[in-house]
Length: 258
Image (cartoon, rainbow, N blue to C red; front, side, top):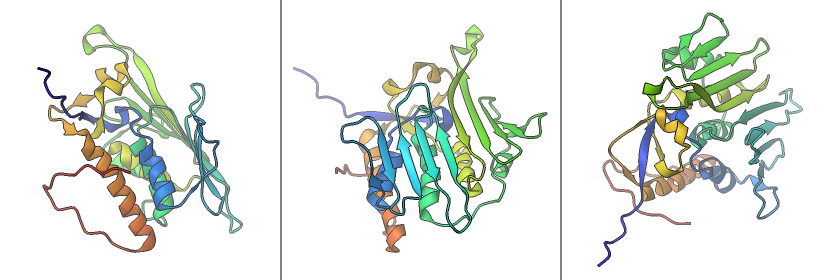
């Protein structure tokens, strides 16, 4: 007799900036379902393009191995806001990209004017070069250019610790001049957070596993699906001003489908 198939489970991975790309719907679903961004891509195309209704902001997901996969672009406004662009590599965790899109859609700036303060408060280390800050584990370097642009470089060990591993690029991100500081700060806050990200170990890039910590306790995969759509509902409620009741602590999350 065959044993019943075990329900799928997800691993809890830290540091979160090395957890791999994750579920792209964490970025795209709230924009389309909660904030009514309009799809502007060809159906069945691997390219996803979502445009804000005022057509001043656009999210592009383009699976090009030679370029950034994610691009968030703003055209600027007649009120004087200049155009800006944020680009993220393929292995950037979707939850970190969503920190920028959530902040763009949910309201005005409420964070420090200098995004680098987020890293300093998390005790990341400023290098000899005044414009660079690195993570305590040495895997991340954030550089600020004189005119305000930011560059993020994330690496991982390309082999076991015992074999003198070399560094391999995991992903890069670039924020152009005039990117609103509160958007950059939101991304950096998502990177320094110690909260683990949920991932299917089988889908992680093999080389990332040498540099991450995976908790022994696994989480049922349906909880991640529920969390996604619960988040969409809460962002939609924020947009309409209709509060939702809080999730009772300790209650198991039911499966939810859409």
